[in-house]
Image 1 (cartoon, rainbow, N blue to C red):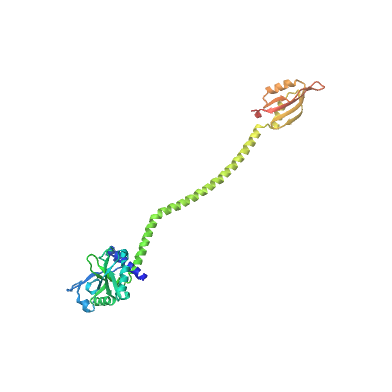
Image 2 (cartoon, helix red, strand yellow):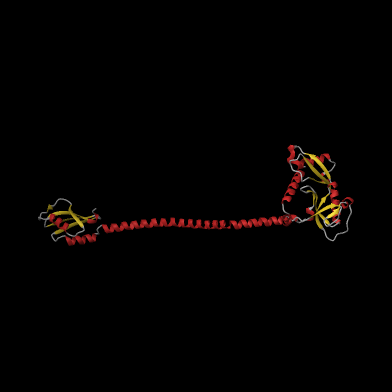
Length: 333
């Protein structure tokens, strides 16, 4: 029962969408064959047949060409039923009509074609149901085929809309499903291609961004390595500068001996010399005055500042014994 309800809803949805879809779109994209309207009245013309052909079952000669048509059945050949729909069940008209057909008629659903009148709005409390036997529809179809008409649908004429009671589009166009699938695939392909073209600049930008980020990360790592190398070079340069400063600012022993040997007068005898980095200590004797010796050395061009280290003493032979300390002028603030 549930499957039948779903089938009825799907049929209603399909018919509604077919009314809104242009015929050229149905033919080109949905694979539905085009069809002419075939009507039944007292005359016979290109798209009109006498009603007696259906009533009496008059077969025609074997036609040379077949024309696909939608046969508009006379309403007196069908069963017309009026069904009351409760206000609360207006949205379930199909289900109510199906249940009413099962309970109040002797027909089996597998033996009939039925449809609700398409002219009636869904807000009415009463709907019209058209019923036709499958055997009658098959007979009508065979009769019309003998006259050269291949029926796509049997419809009922309404004031504004036609109601489809039997649809044989699948039999007329068995490959329509394949055509729809092919068109759907082509549509998806076109949409995908359009989306790819639209997104291509973004993809290229993303690739360039990734490449740029990789380059930036590599350069950042290289900068860190260079910074470490620069710090090491700075350390080496500082050590070299410290060493050069130490060499340039502190007196050397050879230079000190040469300068003192040239500057000290001949009246001075040096007994010992103590050399350290900041200063030179000299102990000796002089036959002259030790104080004058300090004054003389101060007035000379020595790069040292002389000073007595302690009191002056006299030896047994009358000489003055002294101690001098020479401080490098470079060490002075």
